[in-house]
Image (cartoon, rainbow, N blue to C red):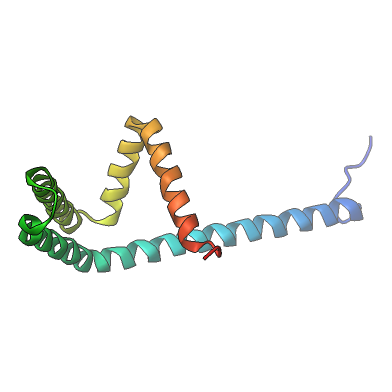
Length: 136
């Protein structure tokens, strides 16, 4: 009857086991770090929701106040008021929802509109890339 080979008896298996354990430990540490980063980012975003909502509301108020002075006639004035109303709605949404509920809403929008979401992500990526490009 053959005897079973243990890790101590086989240095290759022992080394492979140690490497596997180290990889598992590193993966667990990375997962924990990413999870901590996500929680910290969400907490920071939640702390700044009030300021963001105030900024959006201030922009909406300024747009409403200055809409009549914009060149382009009644159509431009109407568009300006519509944009200001959208900013006000966005400010209300930011005030009323925490980051986790915003993420749930975002997931729902992406699932219901995958094509438009992909185009929006590409456009945002392009704009961010342009903002950080060195070709000034």
